[in-house]
Length: 336
Image 1: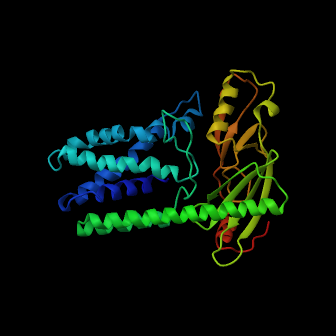
Image 2: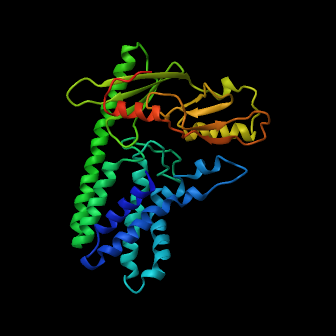
Image 3: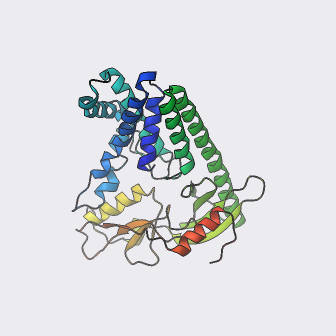
């Protein structure tokens, strides 16, 4: 989830457990603790560009690390608050703020390793976008009301509404999944696996990716409550398979290891970039919900298998792309 919303949820959780004289301190401490797990974004290496994606949403986001993370946050804040708040209460607020972070990240599509060290599965429930203004607005209102009236009840109501919004995301996720399977059936495809995810800042337009016989089919689905869903048909791409597509890549080489890491990071939804030689892309994400123009990928640069792959970003959105995206959200007919 975006960093601001992580702080807002941490602040709301801490506020929900505060006493009347503690409400404002709870907001600040919960906000800081809600941000702290993303300290893992600072892990990186100039020699190994993929180290950052390997460790982001890693051990700092694990459920078992929550008591430690909350304690670290409390120890950081204690010198500033020791005259205003008992350490026991401070730790309660930082513990609640820290605890929200990994769980909220798991509701998105990126993948969060909640179960470390018992499992390295990247959990992604895909029920809310990385940025969702409705969800953030609910938390902002709860904090403002709790701050002004010094009442934890407002925060508890906000958490209840936020949970309801996430449940709405679960319902929409199921609807998008059913629409994907119907679409594949209409095309006569046997679905090997599929995923659906909400697109940026909304719960009505979903990206659909399914695999059939080694081919990814990408579409956008605009969900409707009282009429048929609108389908924006997209492209297709062959699934990248390491042994088939790079059979001569040396075992144990840095490049092979990087490709394997990228496959793991992307839940194996990887294809070759049709427009860039030696670039692998994460098919889960694109500039348009029904497109294959990537947001990120790795440049294999096979001139030397001893060199690490480069992690590359393609986040340039032109006016045409923005207009098409908005048109799909609104359910309008779009032209290629």
